[in-house]
Image (tube, rainbow, N blue to C red):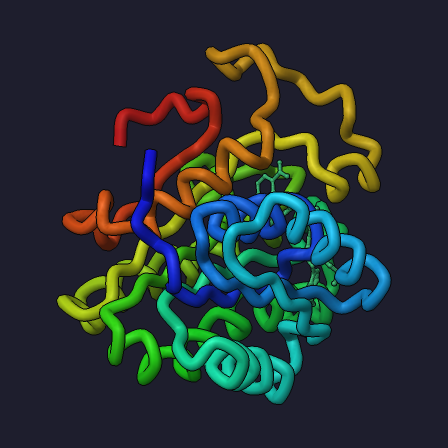
Length: 248
Ligand SMILES: NC(=O)c1ccc[n+]([C@@H]2O[C@H](COP(=O)([O-])OP(=O)(O)OC[C@H]3O[C@@H](n4cnc5c(N)ncnc54)[C@H](OP(=O)(O)O)[C@@H]3O)[C@@H](O)[C@H]2O)c1
């Protein structure tokens, strides 16, 4: 499908790996100029090199920590300086450590809040003037645990609810110029899962009987940025192979 996104510019936060990188890849393939971000310079350089192989738009790396407000400001400024515009803000994250409630300390909660919520708050705040100018989009990657809590991952299940609420509020407050949607990933075999030793996860609750490929999520991000989703805002969309059993 031709997405008609050529010449647009996107900032994809936390995108040197996994789902963020796949989102950057789908956008770049569609002709979007993309800023790719992560903390580790070497990892970021590798990602940029890889993305450039299939990109139709420009791909530029920008090192930064999404928990640092100055870095967020710099990421948005770099996007506008490099490309002259910002059409699409995509927020992903590193993901908090998997803990049960009794394993957590106060600091774990504050860090998860800073990384998952305040990074989105700050990125959106900085991006709004630029997105308004062009009629842009905001797409947040959260998790299916916002619809079906996981006791093994209390931080993600609890703190990410703020992003869901924020996205819903923003979809009204920023309309009609800016559309805001959220993607809820199910199970994807990304480096994060590999590092956590989660290769052999239980797929018995996944009707499609497999993990997702990051590209399958990235393509939905590109669709949400495109005019083909022009009547879609305020939605929380699971991309989970059917894993969520709730009707709503
Ligand atoms: N994979 C799944 O099955 C799944 C399912 C549900 C939800 N999710 C969520 O989706 C998000 C992405 O997951 P993933 O599997 O794609 O993870 P991943 O492969 O580990 O990628 C995480 C990316 O975020 C960057 N990052 C981490 N902390 C950062 C920070 N403070 N500032 C800037 N960049 C940062 C990492 O680069 P650096 O480390 O170099 O900074 C990396 O590029 C996570 O929030 C995860 O919880 C994933």
